Image 1 (cartoon, rainbow, N blue to C red):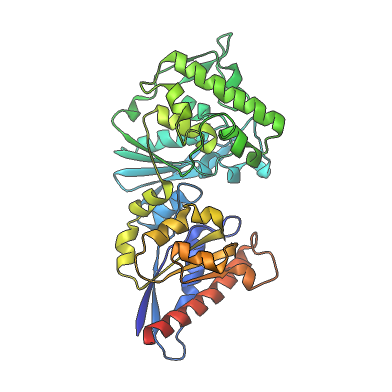
Image 2 (cartoon, rainbow, N blue to C red):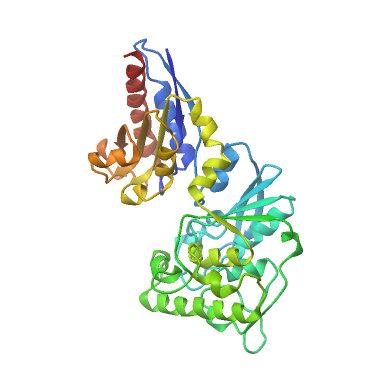
Amino acid sequence: MTSTVLIAPDKFKGSLTAGEVADALAAGLRSAGSDGTGTVHCEILPLADGGDGSVDAAVVSGFARHRCTVAGPTGQPVRASVAFDGITAVVEVANTCGLTVLTGSTLEPLDASSRGFGEAVRFALTLGPSRVVLALGGSSSTDGGMGMLTALGLNFLDQSGASLEGTGRSLSQVHSVTGPLVPELDGVELILASDVHNPLYGPTGAAAVFGPQKGATPSDVSTLDAGLKHFSSVLTGAGLFSGGASNAAHHPGAGSAGGVGFACLLMGAKQVSGADYFLDLLDFDARKDVCDVVITGEGSIDDQTLAGKLPAAVARRSGPRPIIAVAGRSLLAREQWAEMSLASVYALTDYTDLDSSKDAELSADLLRVIGREIGDAVLGIAQS
């Protein structure tokens, strides 16, 4: 007897990529049934929701990887990549100017820039796409997308007429802006993939909510928030964008990626749920339809997961088949499993007293053990 299992996890942040999570679980699942009860066939579909690993997930699903060198968050060269399938290009903030590519992992809340993301978008345009997906999770900067817009052709000037680098620190110094954006953007559909709904500035804006995660002190947050408001005002006065910068600044999602969402909206990007968009892009529905069981998961399953993170989207779209969640840790009470229609939840913390959150080898070992247990359980269900 053979049971087919779709393994569709997000990354375990800090330890394993989505692909590594899936591979470890698959190894365990395939070792099940040694008593002759049957075999487990694994379909592997590493996922992303617009954050870290979005390009990798697209590549695993069949997109080609194209490498480029861009300016990192503080100007250092970063070897990044985009994914392209002949029509759609996927470009992510995380592998160009994200927290994970900061030199020495030193946070730079005022001086980090989104310029590298803009350079990667410009590189992607040379491939001739009809559509570019802008995956905005994992940013290290709070520059309102100023760096990205600079890379795409705009020039920001201070009061003396000198050009400014796109950083959070320089937002308040912007006096005027000249254009236009690069012509290669003409006719290209832009998709803003993010599940962040914060506006650009204010008490629920990019600086106030996400600045501290990027190293911003209370004083830095005030500086950045004022800078974002000023930046929006200057762009409104410049009249370069038909939709209006003021409207874009208040739009839910403008605050994603330190305000890169705001800049993307100005360029006419269509905003979509990152989780659902990537499930569609990676053909999740067709993949799950030929499977008996779906396994999903992420580093921490908690109330935020229930609020609509990637595993919740997977569970919602998996239909009547059993859904199993695997996590580094689970903070959900058993009675909450039903909110995601989960048959069971496996957490690494139930298998070790050690901290696996930064230990890739330990995490992979535990996932193989869990995979074997799930496989034996799945084959037992199939036999009954």
